[in-house]
Length: 324
Image 1 (cartoon, rainbow, N blue to C red):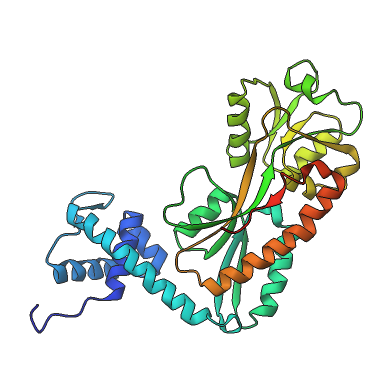
Image 2 (cartoon, rainbow, N blue to C red):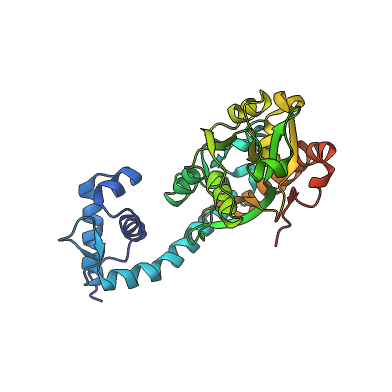
């Protein structure tokens, strides 16, 4: 390398990675807060430094060249290691952590998430927090775009190649009926009852999981009502308007309707969903361990124990998943 040549810049590498992920200078500029011209200048400097074209600049959206793909593979692990080291250094001591962004599905917004927020505010007094409630798919997108550091989500069916996952809770699917006047579960699933099926909207992961299982069992159940709000769905069942397939976690959130609801095991082969702690590769391990421990304790206290008192048959199904 000529003596006058600049050293390779970490900023160049980070912007290259962002542009490769986003596919456009404009999107990379929006994410990083830089101007498009600044992002373009850094990319050009990187290519000049390496002496190769990393992007095919004649195509939109931006497309990596073969050499660009090789270079991206090689720097991904390196940048992950650097970010992890930076996160560990800045939050090796919880009390010294300065910034943390957490996303959670609304399934935990009644008990677990508020308790976690209070706990972290005491353990990390100098930290600026961002807590966000959203659907699992939106939390995963925010994690991939590095807009969140850590999330509590329903485990998606696809593999999380770019994120880390630690399973938290096994949440089995159950049948929820009106507490009085409802037919037998077997009659409902065989289509011998007039009580209509009330379902979650099909854009939700939970609805897709339920539909897949019903298809595996060869069950075709007419739908009458769909809703993306759990409380509304449980209110409809409690009023006698129909029945639904849900989970103990979602049932637990509908406490005001419990006296008018009956929870039953799903017949035939049991199935369920898994809730997980998902985080970016650069999330500090000390922060992760603190949150994981608090979540497990709070889930047991606020959700599992009360539900087992109501339905002891859940003891082998509605459980924490031991850390591997």
